[in-house]
Picture 1 (cartoon, rainbow, N blue to C red):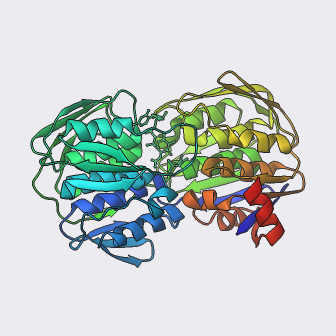
Picture 2: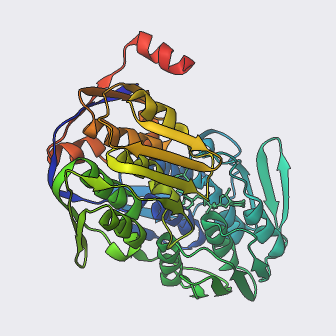
Picture 3: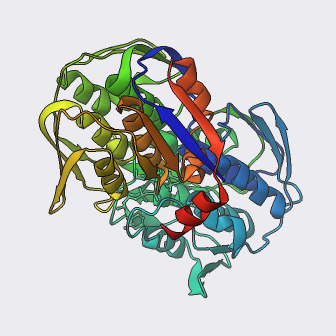
Amino acid sequence: MQKMIVEGGHFLNGKVRISGAKNSAVALLPAAILADSEVTIEGLPEISDVNTLSDLLEEIGGSVSWDGQTIHIDPRNMISMPLPNGKVKKLRASYYFMGAMLGKFGKAVIGLPGGCFLGPRPIDQHIKGFEALGAEVTNEHGAIYIRAKELVGARIYLDVVSVGATINIMLAAVRAKGKTIIENAAKEPEIIDVATLLTNMGAKIKGVGTDVIRIEGVPSLHGCRHTIIPDRIEAGTYAIAAAAAGKEVIIDNVIPQHLESLLAKLREMGITVEDSDDQLYIASKPRLKSVDIKTLVYPGFPTDLQQPFTSLLTRAENTGVITDTIYSARLKHIDELRRMNAIIKVEGGSVIVSGPVKLAGSSVKASDLRAGAALVIAGLMAEGITEITGLEHIDRGYENMTEKLNNLGANVWREDMTEEEIIQFQNS
Ligand SMILES: CC(=O)N[C@H]1[C@@H](OP(=O)(O)OP(=O)(O)OC[C@H]2O[C@@H](n3ccc(=O)[nH]c3=O)[C@H](O)[C@@H]2O)O[C@H](CO)[C@@H](O)[C@@H]1O
Ligand SMILES: C=C(OP(=O)(O)O)C(=O)O
């Protein structure tokens, strides 16, 4: 087990290249189950979520090979093997095996997913969608059993706008008989990426990127080649790090339109932000103005950037109020930031950050992926050394974070934890 050490006080300067999008990758890999020949996906991030899903594809009989960051998935020998336990609990997106296996085999047995603990994360809308398509769904001892004699297209209204439910229903509906309409669908760029892959596999999908998606089921889907989109959340994390601890940073391989809500907030704070086709230029200032943010579904401010943004606000003047309307309990980073001297109050559903404060290096624990990113950013700004444990969360979603930061001029490294530290970590 390792910890990350961040020596504060080094300004970030230079260029960082963004990897493929985690939240696309984790849906693109299961989508390959639906094909009847090889699917090739290029530009995947080297993160543990992708490795876990690649192992799961092999567990159900898929033949998987890697060529750098390109995966080749041959689904011809896959079977509807139950996956009630084990790796499925390591990540959230194992739930995409439900939709993909239902579409391909008409049945699936999958354990309830893991992923970041952000408060309750129900999957009732996924299940509602599968049932509307004709499946019978039961929850037996923590695993979801899904069976359908025949999948038939349906009109499905999502009661909450859900990325996972939209993609999962799409995965099953592309193979259903007739037309499916998903109303109140999510519009995140990752949904468009998955629909692009499915369309290249022969699916008939219209309206992705709007809140009504129309799918005409097809009897079979074939293999194809697909290049993943860049990770807007990783790009946003580096943009926030550049604003917090940077001079001039160029973020390369990004789609700036995917980050408009964040970029607008950075500009409001007094940071210079310029965008071109696939790059962002961020130049920070010694004095920053506080802003309020409210997380919303896309194209609103992403909940996945709320925690890193909290760290940035500690160095801005006056108070900033953060409201996470998607995951109101996504607050585990706050106690850790307080250990570093941050002045943060939680009142009702709002987080109130007062600044500017000079953070102090401390020993802190990443309890989830973006809490980890928030603590790394705090460590970059802090005086002295910050030690971060819980790196398994960071490794789920950030490729080579230490290397990327060091290339920008930070001083960050990983060390093995002592036995005593591991025991302390496990008991904390
Ligand atoms: C692997 C992946 O892509 N993860 C992302 C995905 O998670 P995930 O797909 O799990 O998140 P959803 O978009 O489904 O969740 C949005 C909201 O809807 C609620 N909900 C969701 C489904 C459901 O059946 N019932 C229900 O009530 C959730 O509790 C949450 O409050 O979108 C989240 C919101 O942008 C991001 O934080 C995650 O990074
Ligand atoms: C919450 C996240 O991931 P997951 O849904 O995979 O837990 C995230 O990427 O911030």
